Amino acid sequence: MDNNSSDLQIYLGRQLALVEEALDRFLPIATIRPDRLHESMRYSVLGGGKRIRPILMLAACEAVGGDVRHALPAACAVEMIHAYSLIHDDLPAMDNDDLRRGRPTNHKVYGEATAILAGDGLLTEAFVLLSRSDVMQGVSADDRMAIIHLLATHAGTRGMVGGQMVDMDVEGTSIDLPMLEYIHTHKTGALIKAAVEIGGIIGGAAQEQRDALQRYAAAAGLAFQIADDILDVTAITAKLGKRTGSDQQRGKATYPALLGLAESRERARELNEVAINALLIFGQEAQPLRAIARYIIERSY
Image (tube, rainbow, N blue to C red; front, side, top):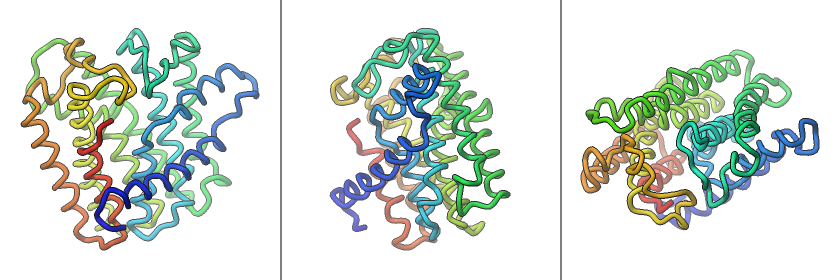
């Protein structure tokens, strides 16, 4: 891959097609009882999205010389967990959003009770997938156990769920930069970090490579949330696919609210540099990871 946007779009399109096919294959069929619940799960998972987390996992696997086919089930598991978190975030008890990816949110279509269960179902289905030796082919039992532990830790109270809780606790209050970074690195960064690290494990990364991928993912994950904060201020609803300006209305902790847009953009650029520099030990095989780091802060939705 050369260092230009058209090559990246071709790469993203190719990887997206792999992920979409695998998600459709691994999700429970909507006609199997409980059919309404399975339909609700599929509605949110297959309703579009950039698939950044699973694509990052595949790119990390490639970067260390692994076979992306072996990483596809785990990539789908991460996307299922991401989708569950969005379903629950959109509920009236949390962010109370009506629009997600340009469509009505899950609870607006299926009702709050079904939406809660759809999130629960996706979270548990992710670990069903990871525990199946017939699906996780090419991944040893020890590596499967390490992956399950890593993903559960990053998705739970020490990661994504914990970050979301603190984010709600400080809503409408004044916080400092360390607290804001704690929220962002946990609420959003943790699952991105897990995706990259798992890609390295499945690809057979050496310790030096795993350390480099961890540094890359930590910086890219924080940059991703800063870019989201900026887009909530600058993008239009039709382009972003969800209601814009909602962070400010709810008094959410964001980089633009704390630092302003100019400094937020500069911080995102600095993190992009950190992420790319973390990959210096890799050659061209890590070019997709470098390109995705740039895309994360330059995207318009």
